[in-house]
Length: 64
Image (cartoon, rainbow, N blue to C red; front, side, top):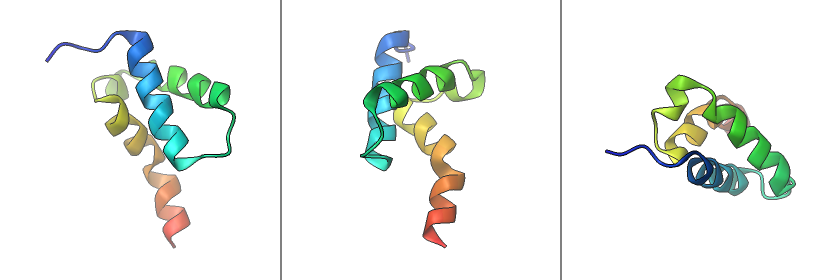
């Protein structure tokens, strides 16, 4: 599988983050996705999977 272009990966990751945080400024979500793209383990994943993995502790806390 070919790795997504950086900007496309960041945009897709930011979109997944926006699904969780609908009221957060999209530029902030893009900045967060850009930071996640620097994490080599997360960058190996699809953007939505990377965002979900990063959000997992938050989603577990909210679900309690």
